[in-house]
Image: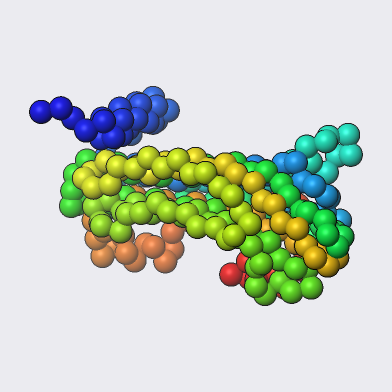
Length: 279
């Protein structure tokens, strides 16, 4: 019986992804989880008056009977160099965790975001830009049901009228989740009328090895009847968890575990009125 071409493609891709993971982490033995994303915006039809970039990373590792490693990284830039015609903005974040043995928990979470305040669009003019990005999720475990691994990620793009930051007028959203061995696995996207996006999804759900890979590219284009100022928000969050059965001693240690936080904030202006950041 011939193998379905889609399944064959998924298995071949998964073998390639797994090989690269093992090469990058030779000590990997029992559990592994990865969530990473990137998003780029370019070719803005007009410039924002002010910009904000944010990046944050958090990790938590606790172990009484095994080894566990968690890593998180994030970075964000908004380039308004007058000599650069592309006027690019981009950010990326990644979270990984791996464990071996028994009685451990590893958690990594990363966040990257950017805001462009007050793009001015005159009456009858069109505001536009191009974008592309990806979201990759991978989970691996050796010993079910004693071990578990999860990976989740979200990418959100929202456009607001600058005088009303409570409700976006347009949006693009990409989200995914893997739970090994749970059944809450998905990879999906949504967008509003004036966002034009092409998505390429590759998934393998179920079993002890799972992945969800998404590549997106597209553009935004909308003509405004009256003069307006617009605020653009883009952000992503990536989180992973690996764990083996936790004894009562380990559960007690959670309250005293070491929390390592890396935080970077570069801003020219910050406002508490942003619904996205408040959430």
